[in-house]
Length: 220
Ligand SMILES: [Zn+2]
Image (cartoon, protein in one colour):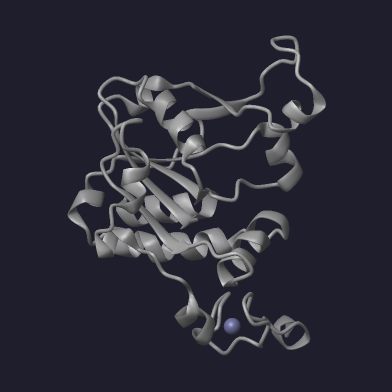
């Protein structure tokens, strides 16, 4: 009934979805700029972290293209409340990673956290669905209580307004025992320079005998 009144439309082309289609129509799915480095074996993402910290494996679902379908998807995910986009990519990637031996060595999935104020404002962490679905497919826990985002107090350094706008991201770690001897899959929505993931990884590596792999929805 609801579907008759408000027919579900494709996030990409806005055409009405057919039975069995979720989120994207088949045409749009076929036009996605797929990266899937876990299948192609591309080291592009892994190489971003060369000399910064050791990454076991790194993969992403799609390439981020400005003014393209990928931008539309990420924009909807982040700013229009369409959190199911995150789960959509998580189910897809989870099913694929479950078939790959290197990713079956993963013990735990941990998301790049949002600051709690941001979380309150948006209502959800945009990478949660992605991480949870991958964890489910790999049959490992998803934990969002290990890595936390904190804000630097204003008194530490005086900054001009412009500098404050680019305020540094600060992450912290808690419940370190959870990741002891674990291979962590660190997940985020999009990777650009890799600076955020690096900061998170450096926190995780404070744990004893921790190794890290990375999975994101998109990469620039
Ligand atoms: Zn479409």
